[in-house]
Image 1 (cartoon, rainbow, N blue to C red):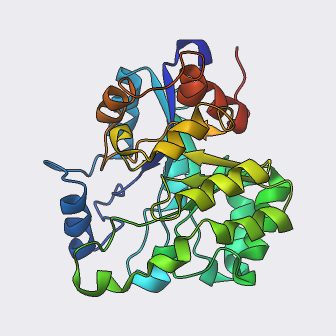
Image 2: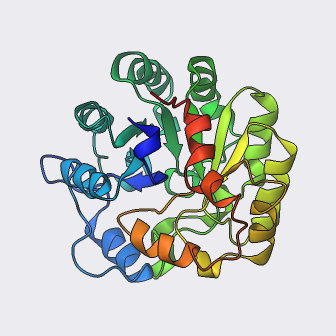
Length: 290
């Protein structure tokens, strides 16, 4: 991966379909999230298509699935498949994994194998979809492995488009994704590298407080067009958190093209833009120049 040639690093993209053609969400949740994000056309690119898409744009992308099988009954795209695609496209794809904390000790053992044998660089947690509070001891074994191996824990925070508009929200509960619960994780695992994903509506101030207080906590800006960012998020990105805020799109539901076009019109200092688009992520991921 040639950092000098990259225009940006997108730290938040989803592998939504496996090589077998199976999707990571059932049709009801898939259709509802597409309507929520106003997605036009098919949004199920293969991993190879994702690699080509980002290569064309001279960007790198962190890519992951979401393992919420215990709550949804739907098998995720295999973590190993994501890692294999990244190994085949190391110039553009950076592999993260996802493990349902409800899998217990099996998940802990698998997390270590995914890092040590498959080169996984981080783990995605979706508390609302997986049905757990981030500070539940249920997940602490996973955090221990992630911290020990130097990997990153990325938490969905705030409202989710998955289940939006479905009766009862598809049974998905928003309370689990308050970023304040991640504050306990950051306190109990002081060397764990953490990303709070998305503008954390309706808990934006909580996310900013945690990120300013805990050195290991960062914020990615995925899932929202920048023109809708809360003013306090823009203020902190321009000042106190300028070294801890990361570009993320949420591709394929939100494209980097749309995100970057709106970001160009956002009131961000010239010296801060390259930090958000690439430099902060490169440092957090441990990427080095050739």
